[in-house]
Length: 214
Image 1: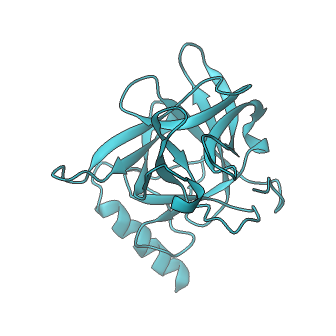
Image 2 (image 1 turned 90 degrees about the vertical axis):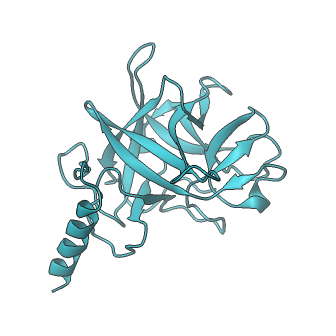
Image 3 (image 1 turned 45 degrees about the vertical axis):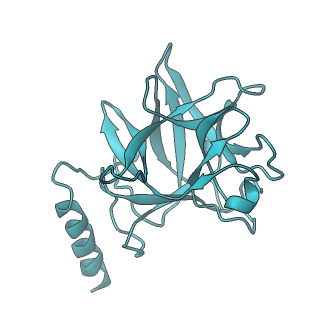
């Protein structure tokens, strides 16, 4: 019965998005809510940069490493794994569809800080950036809580973030970019409406329960 219920939930979520399709990992399997995955960040411009790891760093006045970044010195499997959940559908095991509103959070790290991804105005690089935590972890930096979605693009995926904006329906959509070589290969994730944008591959996390600790 539980498997049938999960199938129905996934089917209903797909009906809500007529142009959607199931998100697949690099093995060709469905990406499902609640399971751990690695994101491999890919830059296509000016050259293809293979799947780099997603980690955390500190910018501005942050005491803790709460800015999400691409670390050019590591591969995806040395990054911090994430899990996805469909907004309004907390059940694990539900297939994730493109265009569906999702929350993203880091998994397998030991920290009292919320690991759900959010956006904030980065005071150091003067840009809308992606991080974790809340206002207390981002002193002097306005924070924004909204939802992400995954878009299919050629052979990989793009992440999109909808920023609530008065008078603009569902808000303004931003794509992911990054500040390259910010600090010794650390590249904070930023939200942009311009190219180039980052692409992502999704890999199963087979590395076990121990990961980077904030």
